[in-house]
Image (cartoon, rainbow, N blue to C red):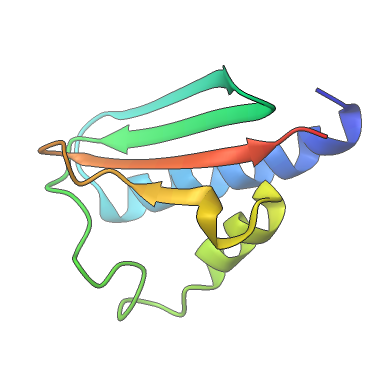
Length: 96
């Protein structure tokens, strides 16, 4: 991964972990793996999952807009995994 992409990766990770600590419950888990031409960052906690209206109406959504921008893939970068009985968010992160 180019050094210039490390700071955005750190900012995205920090934002998601902060949100998990602030709004989630229990243990927070972070996974990072290669995925095609980028990285897949997964953050999950033991909370009941995301509300249907996520990321609104709670808050301004500024943090998630920053995640979208820093991930480098636009709105398609973020996926909320609603197939699990806990909170999981996945971000596809551009490395080039």
